Every structure is written in structure tokens, then in C-alpha cells.
Amino acid sequence: MAGKAWRDLPPAGKATIIAVTALDAGLRAWALRDLAGRDAAEVNGPRWLWSGALGMVTSAGVLPAAYLLRGRKPAQLS
Image (spheres, rainbow, N blue to C red):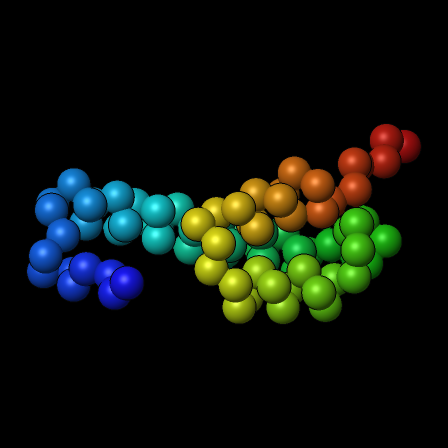
């Protein structure tokens, strides 16, 4: 089954797609910026895998949220 063309979508559908895309892009930028500033010891899992996935996979915000919630180790209090 083929998807609808952009011109055939109702305005609410277009707005939803734009909002989800903007949310995903913003979360991915935040997660990549955070990842770039962390040492490998502060990240759960390999940094190269997180950066590759965050840079290449569009996931409607799910992957960046997973990194921000579970991919970072808790801060160590001195």
C-alpha cells in the first residue's frame, strides 16, 4: 500500500509530521552534543555506536530519548 502524497494530507497531518520531525531533530542535536562532551567512561555502551545511531537513524525522538535517559551514566559526586 502506497502512502499519501504530501499534497493529499490534511493540514493537521502535515503539522503533526513537521512537529515530530522538529522534535526528533532537536533531541538528536542535544544528544549528539551531550555525547561529544562526555568521556567513554561516562557512557553506557560504546560511544561510536551511540554517535552512529544518533547521526543516522530517524526515530521520532525515541533513540535520542533512550540515550538521554539510559545511555549516560549518573554523575559521580565528589
